[in-house]
Image (cartoon, rainbow, N blue to C red; front, side, top):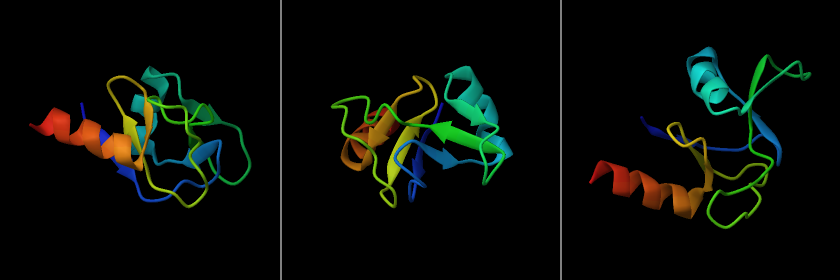
Length: 85
């Protein structure tokens, strides 16, 4: 399963996603719906899965679709390189 990079978080709590990512978000219990401003959101209010650092609006972050972890930019890049190599 891929580690997906998001260019920019919408807020510290959630980022809007398209239908193609809904099944990954559901499987990892990160899907949020019924919020104004969009239909589907990836919840990341718990911060980076490695060190707990909050993802700030406008910052890039990663979503590990296998583990469900949200990762900050540096930890996500490490995870992506590990899974590729």
